[in-house]
Image 1 (tube, rainbow, N blue to C red):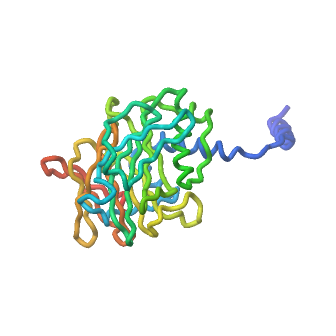
Image 2: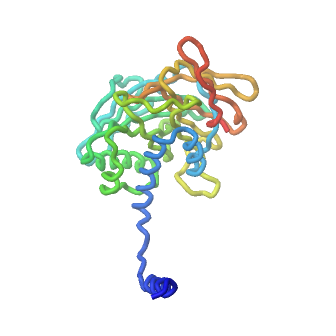
Length: 307
C-alpha cells in the first residue's frame, strides 16, 4: 500500500469519529493551574504578558498613603481558620483588621495567613490590597485547599469553575505555597483576584531577576473584549501586586512628572522576599519602580509593570 493510500484511509477513518462537547470547565481549571506553575518558573517578564492577556491592567503606583487608616496598618497579618472539612475559610472583616490579633506563619494548608499589603483612597473609595498565603499540603489535601480558595472567590462574585480533584492532584507541588491576591473596596471583597505560587522560606530561592521583581499580578478593569472576571470597582485604576527579591528594604515609585512615592514593603507568610501593591491611573504609565537595600544602595530599577 502506498503512502497516499494510507493517508486516504486515515482521513476516511477520522471522518467517522464522533467528537463530543469539549470539557471547558476542566480545561479552564487546568489552564489556571498550569499558568500558576508557569508563573512561578518564568518570572516577571512573562507575567507581564499574561496579565495583559487575562484582562489585568498593568499600571503604576499612586494614591498610596505612607501611614495607616481605619482598616488597619499596611503589613497587618491576620490568620483565618477554616470552618469544617468542606466550608470556606472565614474572611476577616477589613474594618476589624486592626483589632484582630496578629499571627505568625502557619503550616496548615487549610488556614491561610492574610496580609494587608497596601491601602489607599481613590475617587472617594477606600481600597485595601490583601494577600492570603495558603501553605502547601500533601497531594491528598490539594483538592480541599483549591476548593476553599475557590469558595472565597465564588462568594465574592468570581466566575471561575470549581476545581476538580483530578486536576488538583495532577498539578500539586509540595514546594509551592499558593498566594491569593485580591482587593477590598469600601469593605467589600472584589470579584477579580489572582492566585500566584511561591516557595516558602525553607526552599532555595530562584535566581534573582535583574529587575528585582520575582512575580506579580495586575487586578483592574475587564479586558477590552469584555471577557474575564469583573474588575475591582475603581474604574480605570488598577492594583498591581509584586513579590520582590530578598534584601530589598525600600521601594520608591518614580513618576514621569518627576515626583516619587515610597511604597511600604510587607511580609507575606513564609514567602521569600517582600510584597508591595501599587495603584495608579493610566496617566502615570512610563514611571519606574526603584528597589534599594537597607543602606540606601540602588539594587534594581523595574519599568515592566508601569508600561
